Image (cartoon, rainbow, N blue to C red; front, side):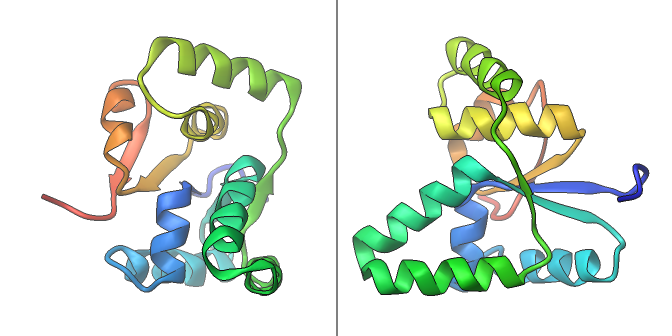
Length: 139
């Protein structure tokens, strides 16, 4: 990995938008192509992988969740492990800002990776002052 590459971090909203071909999916496809060419890093927190998988299993069944995992494993996504330090950072962010715990992991990881968060989730407006956000949908 080259440290001067732009870094983008998908939240669950962005990944689900891509998978369902909803608004913002085209931007994710562009970034996947750039990541495949080695022109950016495209990351996903392990916590958010679990979030997308449980949502898929709940709504579409275990077989679809397994198929989804195989698809995600084939994409040029860098999975960010959950470490003690990341948990502590996410807890601090959650304590200070009104967003979900999973979203706090996204913010903590984005700060550590100096990444731009890709999302359409309005919860992230609470942290716009501390992290860079690229909104996938606009009002």
